[in-house]
Length: 181
Image (cartoon, rainbow, N blue to C red):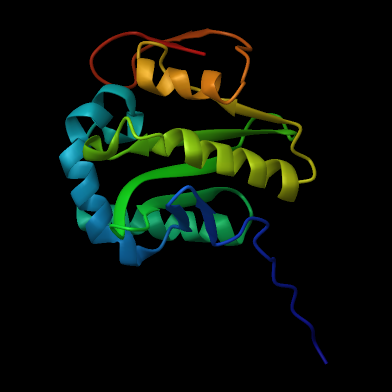
């Protein structure tokens, strides 16, 4: 008899927090995610290197499939953020390994119509808790963002993160030079 080892995802398919659900990426989210990205594209393009060109539905479907594979293999955990009462996709977030085995990075974006409601703060807090309770090797969480993006930069401060360092980078997103911290 032959046994097959199947890796079990170390983070759950769904995380809940404050009227929100973080649902692991699924190709069923292609259309609502395209819609959210389109409506938020001007803001996303300023800060996100992945948003320099609007993805097609086929391109996004491939990205979502790659995210599903990475989730199953415990290489990264990508989630779509849903507001549960409205049952609407309102953003995305993810937990990724960094260049250090004990450090993971969190990224996030929120649909333009849903900013300023604490969504990124709540979902980031949920990911921090999941990382520290489910990933035994996690001793540090990093959040990198352009310091000029005041709303995004406020989230780590609200959650008690401390500034570790500042990096100067050539702009990967439009239109200016980036300082990440």
